[in-house]
Amino acid sequence: MKRQHRNYLGLTTLGLTLGLGGATLQGCEADGLAGDLAEQCGLDVNCTAGGFAEGKSSISGIASIDAFFGAAIDLNAAMVGLSGALRADLDAIGASVGLESGSTGAELKGAMQGHLAGYIDGGLTIDYQPPRCQASVEASVSAAAECDVDVDPGEVSAKCSGSCEAEAGVAASCSGDAELKCSGTAPGFDCSTGVCSGSCVAEFTAGDECKGTCRGTCDGEGGPNGFEGRCDGDCEGVCAVDMSAGGECEFSCQGSCEYTAPDGGCEATASASCEAKAGAAIECDARCEGTVEPPSVSAECEATVDAKASASVTCTPPTLAFKFEWSAEVAGDLNAQAEFRAWLEGFRGHFAGLLAARVEAELIGDAAVALVASAEGALRGTIEDLSTSGDLKATVGAKCALGELPLAASALADASGSLSANLSATVEVVSAF
Image (cartoon, rainbow, N blue to C red; front, side, top):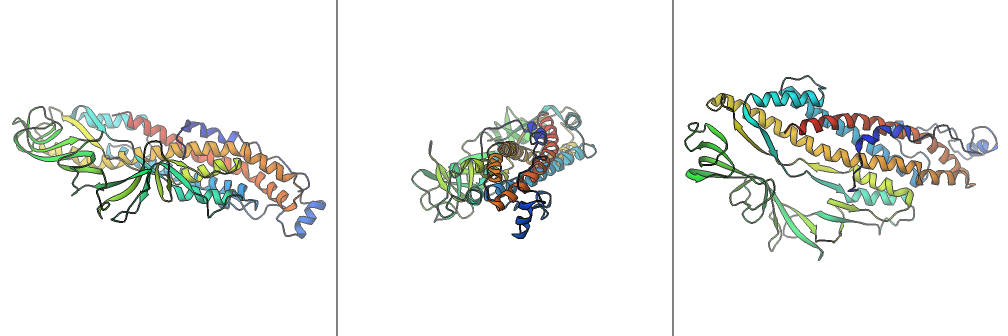
């Protein structure tokens, strides 16, 4: 999974980069001696067995070429799925503020700002840590073995510079280059010895100062349970201290709590991971949060292996912490406050989903650009070499692959166009806060 990002909007021009459809390979025509020999050998010289459009990757019978088509199929499906997920969250947010499905980013931004103005003063601030993303190391290793015939499947492995998923429980352990970390999720998780991501919540009594969001009374304002917001004085009720930047929490952590494993490993309710020490890369055969260092493969396989790993990326929606002050009109209206809180809870899930899908989409967009570039570079060079190799089977396979390359590029361009539009709308929505 590459860390260096390209502009995802560049994907919309992918269909213009591959002018491969009109090329032919000498000695591979259906008529003539080569065609007769191919047919006698049972080869599909006219490429009638179906290909990319039918979801088939076994087009040429050549490992490195067919692996490319498999990666293109996976990336195309991932982009279509992410585009749909982004639009579903955008439409849900739009519906909550009275908009029709398919509204633009500017329309969503304006409607949300208008909705907020009816309840709160000064706008809504949203704090969160970046979504946590993981790539499948297994997908990278499997892709390397499938693409490069010189790779020994029994010996190939990938490394993780970051955190590698481990089996939880007392048996969990890590190598000398990594430290065992545990992570638990509220409610009911003690985070007094770890780092809380989210809000740290405690019951407060009169006279206690709340350096966060007070839900109850603040210096007697608003009546019982009539105040919610930043309280610079004394809070009676519940105090929620924002911990989105990380920090120790002496109270209940409303989010996730990460801590170094004590002797004996992680609790049964927690997840475990091996976190690489500074500058180290650890062997990993599960999911890696960070940078996957794929196995060493041939040049024509590098983009394919990276694409397979990127298509496997999943990002966890972050925990959100909201900050706001009631407007003068709503300060004493408990029904209006309850109405806004209900809206905010629905908005929370959809906005967090947008943030996670946005990161996934950018990673996949990078991989798609690199994959199509490989079709014009190292992969095409391999196909051209095979077309003059004197191997009839390879020649026929290369011809079929050459005809399918523009179809793959066109599908990726179509998927990326839709994805780019929904990403642009997402940027507008995020900029509203």
